[in-house]
Image 1 (spheres, one colour):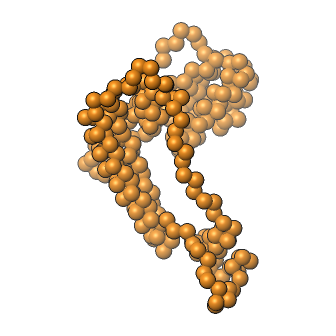
Image 2 (cartoon, rainbow, N blue to C red; image 1 turned 120 degrees about the horizontal axis):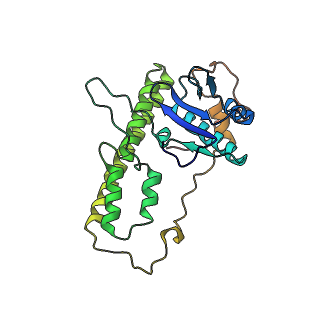
Amino acid sequence: MNLPYEPDVAFGVHPDLGVGAAVADDRPHLHEVLRKHHFRYRQDLDVYLLPEGTPHNTAVRTVAAATREFQRSGHTVAANPRIMLPLPVPTPDGVAARTTLPGQSLTALTGELHELRRSADVAEVLEQILDEHHGAVGDLEEFIDTAAAWCERLDTPDGRKLGQHLRTIAHHVAFLSDRLADAQLDLSVMPDVTPRDAPPLADVPLPKRHNVPSVTHTARARAAVASSPKRPADLPAAPEEAPRSRDAPPSPRRTR
């Protein structure tokens, strides 16, 4: 990175060694903070590195936490934006790895909506979310399918049951994608333009979301003694689940 000044601490990413940090001088506080956040010094390279195998999301959060601590102490910090880019998603043999495109996150696209005035422009943003190769909806469906495959790989009754449940959720996401595609098509043909005197989007209150009822204590107790790969099957029942009279109606159960 070409910087107009030399920062006290600089974070970067190496293709083989992962996220690293370098300090401008030998002030003990800088080294102390890096070690506190699990960076380890490599004398041969004169840099600090996170432990091998650190997950990408963990590395990003670690850099952010260390940066905040340095800034609270009055130190200057520089970070290579490439740290934010996740590694390519593994693909089957013969299939090209999908590249990560900056600015395609839902956060970035939501921020973009605040600057748009034409329906056609909003339709273009929504089209990016629905993109077959890089869209957020497709990514979510792929993530859920992969999570389902992980559960099924346990080869246990609970794993197979949860895998089936996740695949049902993936079908709901696919249905959501179809509905969003309908909305995107409607937006693309609408001639409407936002009036110039319209209030900023940030000032328009969003509709109140539906509150999901909280789980009852009885349901919590039932879940606590439910079958689990890590729980012996002969544990005693919860106190709330005492035998009921045959004449008593069964308690209502929540369904998904």
